[in-house]
Structure formats: C-alpha cells, structure tokens
Length: 172
Image (tube, rainbow, N blue to C red; front, side, top):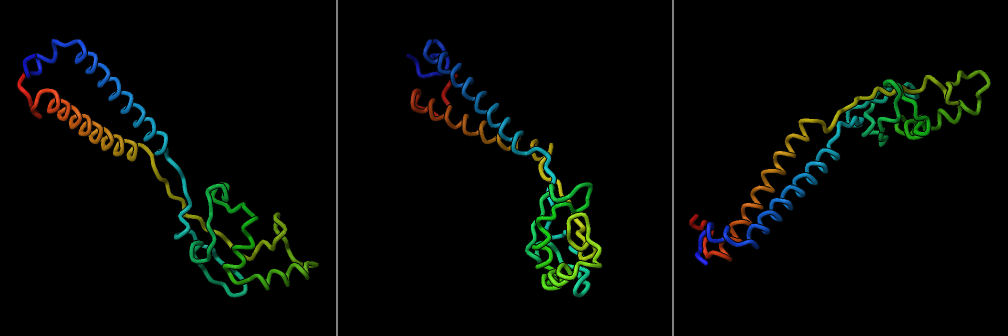
C-alpha cells in the first residue's frame, strides 16, 4: 500500500471508518446542540440584589432583599405583586419588625389584616426581574461548541494519518 490518502481510499475498511467517523461526528454535534438549546431557554429570574423591600415599621426604611437575607423566586410574584406569604416572617426579620408584628397580632381587635392574615401595611416588595438565556446564548454557545468539536475531530484525523501514513499532512 502506498502511503497516500488515495492509497487509503482504495481500502474498504478506510471507507467504512470514514462513514463511522462522520456518523459519530454528526451524533455528537446534534446531541451537543440539543443540550445547549435545552439548557439555555429564556428564563425569568428575580434579581435579589436590586429587589427592594420597603419597611414601614418600626422605622420606615428600604433594604435590598439580598441584604435582608430574603431570596425571592419568580413564583413569589403575580403580575409583579408579592404573593408568597410564607416569606413574611423572613421579611419581618429583615425589616426588624418581628416584635412589633407579634405585639400587633396579639392586639388584633382593631387591626386591619390583609388577605394573608398579616397586617397589610407593614412592608412593600418592589421586585426587579432579569431574563437569562435565550437565542443569543444558544447561538453563542452553539458556535463555540461546533468550533471545539471540529478542532478535536480534525486533530483526531491528523493523528490517525500520522499513525497509518507516517505524516500529519500526507500527500493526496
């Protein structure tokens, strides 16, 4: 056998190896692109570092959710309005109003309660939403993935040529 690519092309095992090589390459690329597409869908998140809690009692002041140790999820809001009353205790602690609320609830005779059973006027949450992922991420990661896979494939092809033909760039 002559040590050229045309000499290799005359061998049936080499032609079969090329078909397998292309098949594996396509499967890897398709699987990788599907994985990239699936993991980079547009997702809405709450930016807790910029989301503010306006505390009305005991002293009126504003804090960020992250500074107060309160971490919100998008499901905590409906149309931008806070609706997860399970976090009220965390918010009250962050605002420094736990004793105040306990005292109010113990004297709840003339207290206006919100629909959640807590005083409706103690705090207001002003959420800031961010979007992550989307088509720009998918396109960027896809191009990067394809470049990496092509570079690795080309490297494997050159190593194969070196092992079989004795040169990284053999004659045609």
